[in-house]
Image 1 (tube, rainbow, N blue to C red):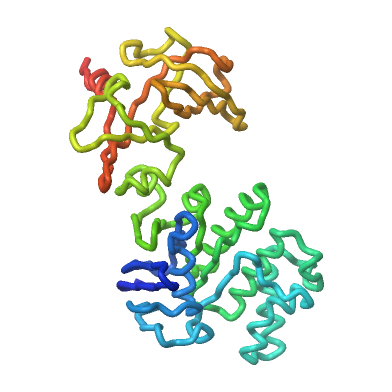
Image 2 (cartoon, rainbow, N blue to C red; image 1 turned 45 degrees about the horizontal axis):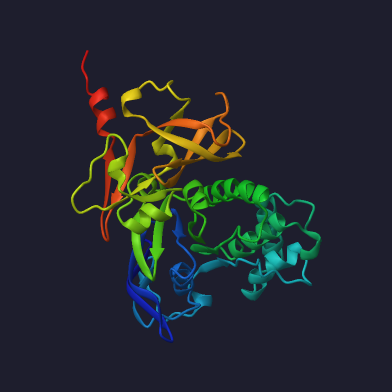
Length: 352
């Protein structure tokens, strides 16, 4: 493993920021530290960078224990959330800053900076100052400055947080492609699950200073291992008395369930292909989501969310709707269980 944390702990006053954190990251991967505010993800990142010193535990980079190695000598590039560009330096000088500190020759600096400006797609903007750049351009410059000294590891602290939604989506794709070209091991912090799922090779999910789950984006999304993972990832609704829903019975030890939008099928009343397993709900509200209609449906005293194709006849607020729940995530205090709708399962198991 290229980066390892072994039983790392960190306390700020009475607040336990990191609680026995152990993680392993392979070389060349792009890893997302995902979790809510205060979950420990930024403290993990800063500890790897050398900006925070753990109270106990060990941190290894490329097999070398780095606990006592200063941040400047760890071979780590760091991209801050607020860019941290030098206001009175041009794009060229911001990127060249670390190279000048390392006392490289003028020829090398010019060559390296030119390569990076081409990599980030800002040719022609070398002489501009930060106040003359857009948010997305500033972030690219910060990225290039971190890469300039040829670090072995790149760390990014919520790199898209200060950028508007449209540019943020474009930068996600750009970052993914650029890191793939460079081939550098990278770790970024985010509280945006869509961002983590779209960009990363691996997600490390944090909560209350602990690791909840580690895995690929697909694994984390489809197979949450803890109640927190099931609730935090995806847009789900928690319910009790889930046995009211057709096709489900109470499973001993699991008193609650989560319904995700992708678990919900909707149709006009009486038009379902499986009428014997539908529940009747009422549309409380509707939202246009570009390629779909997001329906908020009142069902057995709860509100569930469903996505509905715009190719179909739209629903109106207050209209009745037939609902099929094809799957639930059942959970208790420590476990998650994925359960299929038994009625649909029986239908699909019929052999002709």
